[in-house]
Length: 429
Ligand code: AMP
Ligand code: GLY
Image 1 (tube, helix red, strand yellow):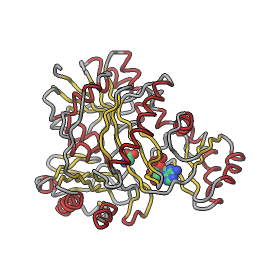
Image 2 (cartoon, rainbow, N blue to C red; image 1 turned 120 degrees about the vertical axis):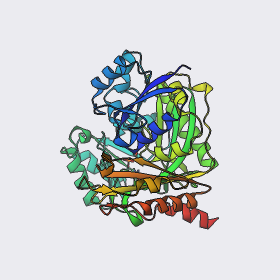
Image 3 (cartoon, rainbow, N blue to C red; image 1 turned 120 degrees about the horizontal axis):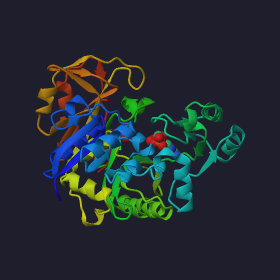
Image 4 (cartoon, protein in one colour; image 1 turned 135 degrees about the horizontal axis):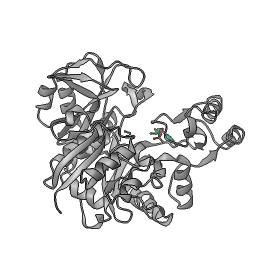
């Protein structure tokens, strides 16, 4: 394999970790990031191109001999980034617009699961309130109401009462999320423990990655509003060898085959959001990209060279590849601006980053910062990802929290109970 020039699309913590991993590769000649963030500046050349500006991304890639585009977020893929790159013969790590429907249309996903017998929650699809409300008769509380399309992670309502469920149906179908909620899915509430599992596929060959667990709620005790994720760790004890085998055989492999049969082979990473139920794993949702912050801890555990694998995935040659993972554990704490996921201020000063980053086993990925001279300023909702690698999960968490304690940022907050499930598992043993 010759030297490659890579364009990473996106500018958050996930993309910082991808740039960091690609930057270690002997086959990568140069990395560009669009738009990237200041913390990637010493590893990648930052471009003033928004991640959603598909024509500008394609144009840049074509004019600058880019051999691989690695797309972090889902929106450019749902807009057809991979399809347009293909017309210029540029490899893209990430699915076509059609295949990206696995994430961009919940109805598409549910129908696919029904057709190919992939275990998920029982459901109905609706475009009008009356039949949707009637469907609630066949369900019991809590009710799960989902906008069909992409709603920046806000399109799922878990309604405790029938009244709340009916209100959510009315709100969504009357345009709460615009076109994204012109149609809705109502589904059965699944009981169990959630886990995220990742697998690479080129449409035929499948290369399993590892599992992780994140923490969606903003505050300790899993309280407060849903966020993009406040902390994560890998491996996840709930994802046992048996659950892994069943997930591959009952969910991942049938999905890859199904997408091929539907004439829209899937290329990229499949991020399966799973509920580990009493009777086995069930699919809650797919994302057509890496998780953020899960990607960051996957990159900490990955021992193989990432670049050739992503390249092979994008060009249909994944079958000959394998991935080596550290047997150690990775943990991640998100530091966010006070107010997130609601309104928050930008521009506060963050100190102590160098001291924290120098601690043993620590790597810091920036999700929303800006550099001004020697100073680091907060520039987003989720701002920093403090990651640690250690011999086991609890030690990794402890290390990460010791590094967090070195960071001086009064305008920020973090959860102090990341990994509570992990500790429970360890105590049970
Ligand atoms: P999603 O955007 O599909 O990931 O949904 C957001 C969150 O809602 C998930 O991570 C779950 O915690 C929860 N959720 C979604 N669907 C279900 C379901 N059928 N049963 C239980 N919880 C669900
Ligand atoms: N951490 C959840 C997500 O990336 O969707």
